[in-house]
Image (cartoon, rainbow, N blue to C red; front, top):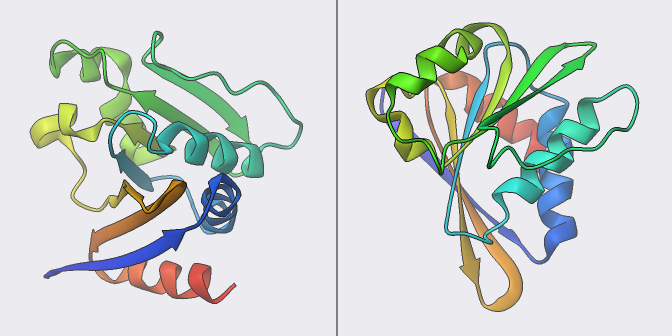
Length: 158
């Protein structure tokens, strides 16, 4: 099946968080979001808003830059937030349990280029690019298969 793409203009950090919250409602265990873009593009901001939307009670959502992975328990199952910027070897992914989590948890992966061939083919890819003003972004969402097209139709209609 061919890849599909959609571009969404995000005027400010609140628009980025709003997209994350809308998408959060449609995620289920086994879904993976691959978040890419330069430093400061909004990857962690997006991930924090998405995780917060799924939590039953508010909690601190630290960046997993130094721990590589943070996990959160939700009513819909675990969420894994990974920041692979400091990853030195893709074999560490197996040691972290991330490859298993791709099948059983909702996974948010920053710097997914570090996954190499371990990147799930069914993932939704979201690339954040600066656009115009300091706070504006373009989110380019890419996917293969029909599930994400249906989810994004609902998300963008909300």
